[in-house]
Image (cartoon, rainbow, N blue to C red):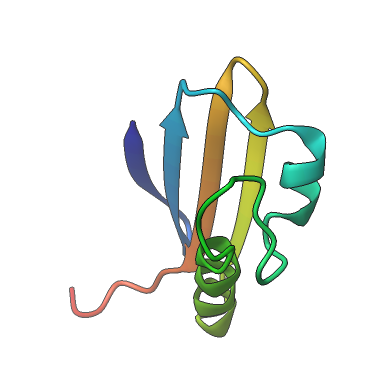
Length: 83
């Protein structure tokens, strides 16, 4: 599920799934380059995403529980151009 909404000067994008979720160790380390809790992958995806979001003066937060799923919240500054 993907939702987008504006909140004043911020644009929020929320991505939710009902998958397996992340364990505590993965959740605490998910933004560290080359960290992966999987047997495959480079461990760069979330680190790169966070860097790009922060370069745009935004933020990213993850809520996750094993067996329930994951919610990723991205907030970016938003300024309407024009009328």
